[in-house]
Image 1 (cartoon, rainbow, N blue to C red):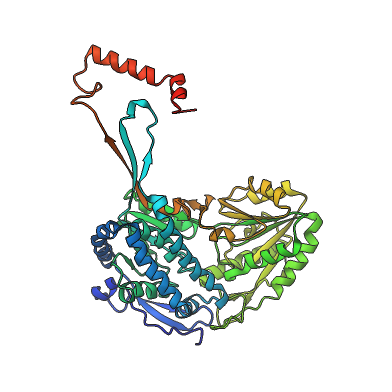
Image 2: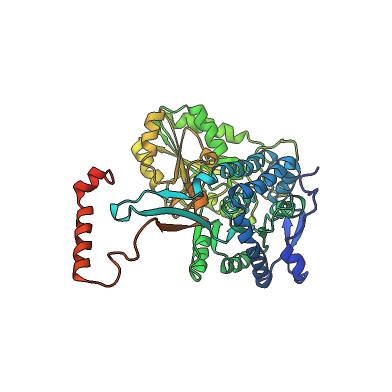
Amino acid sequence: MESGTVETSIEVNGSNGASGAPAAERIDVLNPANGNLVDSIQVDTPETIAATVARVRANQAEWEAIGIEGRYHWLGKLRDWILDNTEEISDTVQAETGKVRGDISAELFYVTDLINFYGTNAAKFIGDEAVRPHSPLIAAKKLTIRYRPHPIVGVISPWNFPLAMGLGDSIPALQAGAAVIVKPSEFTPLSLIQIIGAWKKEIGAPDVFDCVLGTGEAGSSLIDHVDCVQFTGSDRTGRKVMARAAETLTPVSLELGGKDPMIVLADADIDRAANAAAWGGMYNSGQVCLSVERIYVEDAVYDEFVAKLTKRVGSLRQGTDGRKPEKDVGAMTSPNQSTIVEEQVNDALANGARALTGGKKVDGPGDYFEPTVLVDVDHSMKVMRDETFGPVVGVMKVRDSEEAVRLANDSRYGLAASIFGDKERAEKLARRIEAGSVNVNDVITNMLAMGVPMGGWKQSGIGFRHGDYGIKKYCRPESIVVTRFGGKNEPAWYPYTKGRRKLVNRVATAFNARDLKRRLGLRG
């Protein structure tokens, strides 16, 4: 099949079909690899968004009631459908994003792995939790923490990974018992529509998962109606999401990108480091929140590393392919982002940087930016301070690891980082990096480590994916305190009398004595 076509029936979500919204309110979805029209989508209005939320809200209680295993049953069917239709789904993703075929497989298998991870661990993460009383004063109480889902979760997902983000953020919420409405990017809505259509029609799953379509206005409307928001995108838009959610005191989780550093120490395997930097910086055309964007290399190995990195990046095959992987680097998915990348590179070149390979946009058709290695860069340049989100890396020479750590931390972002070198030395340095995740002798791999949290510090966001937190953030803890035995009245209840007060004070003083608690093993 040609990469610019979609061999699948794409059905717009039910709210559009039922609403009769004006046909003129449509958005064209273009293939960034060639500029061709792939499809057009009908935009949701505030009224159709409210109706969609109300419809799935009506079904949420039953979805919650079927329990963890019941929900995993349906998510497992979704996993199997994805695995049975990977080529057809990949066709859609490729057509709307301009990705090369080799970039898509990881996205699909991330989703299926996530379904298995939360399906098999949800009972441990959000099952009823018995808590030991901390004091003899409440020893007669049975303490339980119960995790109840936010009824409706709104997911506002980006264009760079329409399934890994759109589905990846929905899966733990669905497994927790929430109903989910996704607002995908207007640039890349088709693959999500395709999969939600399968959830409804082919799998026949409960009507608790849907999408609404449109631009930022649709996202704002969605925030007004849901009980919890997960947003992935820029820090600038994240602030707007947070402000809108604040109007209804709706909790938010924000993943807002990064300016991820990589440190190469003198004792690193330079071949591995250069290969990792090339893939970590150019994968998905650099349109990854975890992309390697700025590299700090110790003086002793700087020339060797730069030569090997430049050779590797310069050999990458850029363009469009089909089902057979024939290219390494694809198109820029968003024309807005392509402009940002060009402005940052031009700013660096104008201020003394050199492009050892790449450095400019590619003449059409399609929207491509050459895989680029910049040297002679410094922190006065936008390309070393602002998120680039394109196939560009800047490399700086540093005197030693101390300077490398200082520069790595000199950023308003703190999402992820990588350090290459002797593993013991590198791990010690990793503990000093101001980021939510640090890879030692690897890049981006933290995204696949489901058992540990993935999220940002500083302006890289609020909240985390993966691990127990990745599902608990979609829940509300409910404490249940059961009195197992007692009389008709408690000493602390009415009426207040001198005798009762004296008894309560005596008991409280005795039970709060440090030595008594230590003897009882209640506190160290």
